[in-house]
Image (cartoon, rainbow, N blue to C red; front, side, top):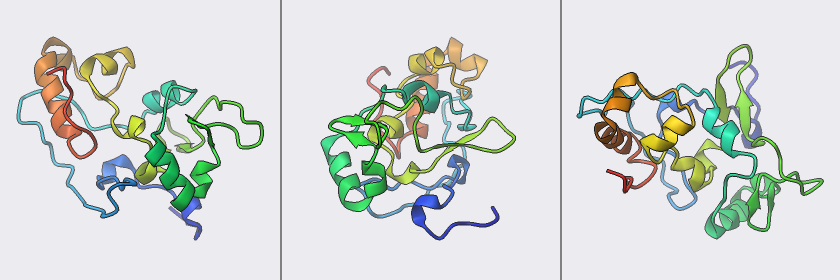
Length: 173
């Protein structure tokens, strides 16, 4: 990417496909992990293709952040904290109105791909998505393959394996 900004808030984020373990407010040591398939079960879930469906669906008031996340943003990422009002996130800093889309969602030019400008500091709601196969079906997640719909138990195990660096396993196994 040409012309990278020097301000960290203006830096393009790494694509999910670059597969760095997310840096969270509670885990300040960055750990890398590989993108090789963790599928030991035969389910066919694909890696995220950054279609943005989850981000656009939930960013209009459908997300929350914990008090710890908000406190961390206030201390270490005040630019993110500007978009918080009380317990609500992604509020317009000028009007205090709920934004229709996450202010950190960046659409790639000339293609239907999205990245997150605060990927390493995103709220747990974002970090934990998707939680289960049912949620992926409702959200029309493009990670699903036809076989995943016929064997949802196996697909859930695969999803939990894929997400093990971001969230605990789902209780729907």
